[in-house]
Image (cartoon, rainbow, N blue to C red):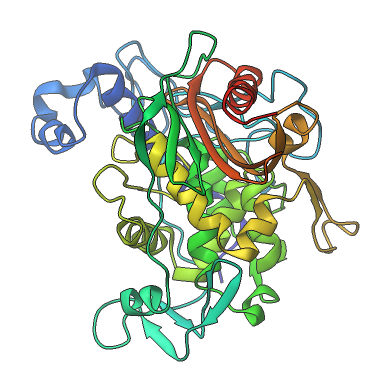
Length: 438
């Protein structure tokens, strides 16, 4: 049996490896080297020598072959059995939002948001199957009978997902579609009248950008489409792989502790309200067995929604990656698909939620969707029903929301690359005010 000392040594080594991979990605991004250059760098490693990749004793004071940057970047050794992750999740961050340092930049989510990176976690439900998943068509649930293998063959996932589904949502410009005026700070955005499928206003709506934790809208939808009511009561353990992932990438978290056993239903709420990477990873493990396998399901859903041309995901939490991208328009379509699932809409519209009592948290955790709580007192000429935000440096402050106007019509609004959480909210409010009748 592994001793505690051996366990700590193994964990220390794993964290160092994760940090090195993260730092490599940052250096490649800083120097403008494409991801494919990793193989080239490895091939010419002898030529580069210790100037870039060196063991302890280079310009930086690294441990066991750590990565030195061009100016001697030090990889700090932090090993603990305490749960990790940037920022708490139950307090009001105020107008500026919580600021948490993430990979390649500051991280914030009107209360919590994710950092960057990618790593597989493998614990959770074994195999890739789903049994009698429940799908949504509007407000009517449609059970799909029998198990469906994810990979190929009769009764495969694609057939199961498409069975009984309505065509994906599409919206189009009209002769009255307008651009954003100078008062809107966000670099990308779109406002859509859902009933008519008309784009009312847009700015760079079809340009690729990083969605940050708006990604978790799709994480929620894909998970919900692979779960049964029985699954909601099942439990998942928050493993050391999950806490280390959140720690190394400085992700926002729900607040669960190492080895805490959490109901699947709580993981769904934890994914959206506090933008918890711990919840997202545990959910991915339960549904698909690993984050990589779950991301495959996400991209299958992207294709089903007709968005594969400009949308692709590499992780389930919104970490920055050049191959992790979408557009403002595509994110609006994803939110529409999630809002059409009654269970997803319930979660996306929740202002607060109290998690199930556990040994670690006898009174549960109070988690909040700060975007909804901060926009609900603004005049949007209606009511914002659903919302999810995101932030990494590469995306700026962003948000996707669904509102119902005083005229009874629903609207989708997505804005990205604003300069702060407050300005992101102001952009959304201004768009609603400008285009929804009083």
